[in-house]
Image 1 (tube, helix red, strand yellow):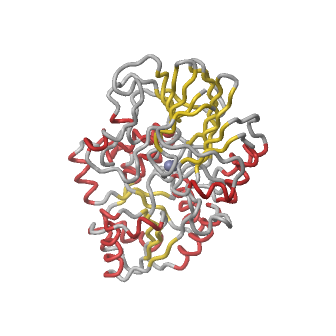
Image 2 (tube, helix red, strand yellow; image 1 turned 60 degrees about the vertical axis):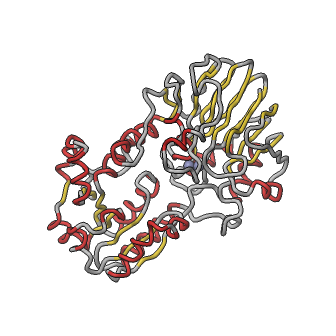
Image 3 (cartoon, helix red, strand yellow; image 1 turned 135 degrees about the horizontal axis):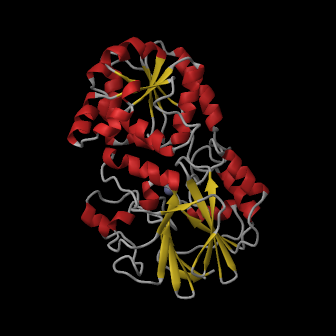
Length: 418
Ligand SMILES: [Zn+2]
Ligand SMILES: [Zn+2]
């Protein structure tokens, strides 16, 4: 078995790995680099050179997509050959499909195959076992790839402090054995606090609860629509604080797409749907009437929003901050930022910070990483005990040696034997 990391040996994002055995090959993730230019043509040029991407090549058996973060699937839409079989989690696929009309350059795979936790399958010479992992993306997987008597484990993105931390514990208690190569992510290596471990989603729930209790008016939380773990955390804290959770149509659709009975939905009595003016225009323009009508019974309108504001938590969208209903509900409001702090420094965030200041809205930050701390990465590496550990999805590959044994370095685009 041979491996080529097309991209990812020294960067976070844009991950793409090709694995070859007996003249056949598969691809793990087809991500968009985080610093990719926005125009489609330039993005096309970033697509790794893989036989079968440009035109049909029977040696390419398929692509496995670990999860629905753009840095793991974002270049897939640029592939000319549309006949490559794809495997992805069903929940991840449904979320991508639900998001298509609501996000710029929305994309979903056409009729993919679905991964199931620990249900192995054969693809030519490869035996593949997907492992459901705890990550900030819903329905995310790591992969064990076996061929030619060798074993490779690709961690993809994972953590141990989310709402599915039991998955991490289970893997540690019963790890796959005889791993020749572990391709392990190291997103948080070199980041602050990573040596001590990160706060759990449960701890965040308590912090949100305290924050909601202190706020007199509407409490906004600025977070990612597709971070389902975080939405659940916010919902639970809001419920404890006896507040409703107010969501928009995009989030209502994403929650529905999870198909998960324990994840809050628009028809739960503690949830309401508020569709801001800009989203109403958007619905009309894109004819999303059936989407809208499915949540009709649970909708509230501007007057009701004002009435409920002191007893609610609203998921904040920067583009809706000038909505009239929202503007009229700001009495005693507060905002909690709940994403990576780096985004706050971007130009697009300045407008929001300005808006908060002008409206005298106090703000705080409650967040935890979607990725494992170094403490947990060490436990993971020790449990899998690979012959060689290869850095991937990191800006600090040279630091792996300080934390892990048997580290082996490779360059992007270089082929090497397992
Ligand atoms: Zn990633
Ligand atoms: Zn991710």
